[in-house]
Image 1 (cartoon, helix red, strand yellow):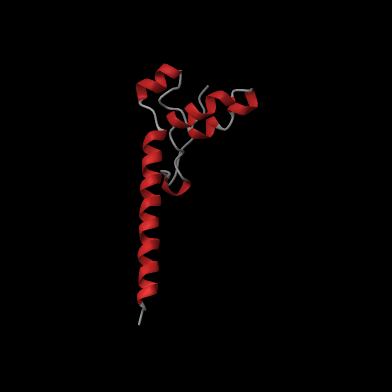
Image 2 (cartoon, rainbow, N blue to C red; image 1 turned 30 degrees about the horizontal axis):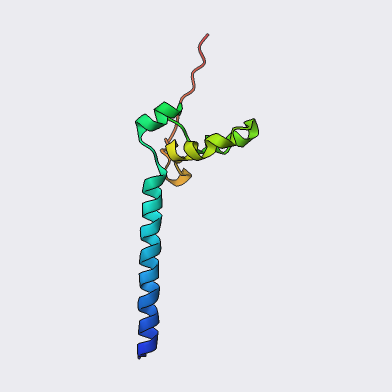
Length: 92
């Protein structure tokens, strides 16, 4: 049997988790820019997020935040499309 104190703590934790998740969703929605805004900044619509991490190597850290707001996340290996086989033909 669960006591009233434990139920109250569980309800508080549940509310905190809900607030955290709402905050994460809200910050993600604000974190991305529209396709037109990204194009105006000079970013391609096919920009992959892995490319943003390369910017500091070229002293372009000031572009990194906007880059992350315009990029597409990479496809995870588990969801990548795989083919049973392929044929490679060399011409010439």
